[in-house]
Image (cartoon, rainbow, N blue to C red; front, side, top):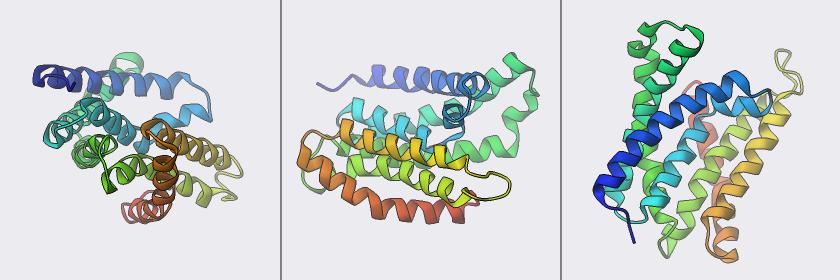
Length: 205
């Protein structure tokens, strides 16, 4: 049974606020390497996926709700930063914040819909759980590229291992059968390469 529209809207807003605030707290207080997950755009994409997975059906509801949640999360993060460590309030309307809201819309639509696909049938039940796994694998690929860099040394190895492990875990949790899990993992690998290319084109290093 899918949740009513009002519940979806309220959950999107409150979930976005919670995501932004907890993300800042996570970055500030959780030590490396796990603390670095707070800087992960893939983690936010996975949050959008599980929102759609919770919505169950209705791609438009999932897309709009997940996008709204990620957009709300951005100012919530900066409000937490201003209140907890005294960051400038002007950051709320600065171009980087607006850019992250734009990315939030794109990620929310794509991964929110993917969350509903994971409960579907045919190609959707494979592609749905493959997408959040792929974006975590892609971030793991970024970390692998940094291994041995003079500025990072071998530290990115932990980032890569954590993201790859989480990617596999998300696929397993979001799939209903072992067949679905195996096919979704296989599908996630080429998608991760495409995601890695997209990250690099977007300027992520």
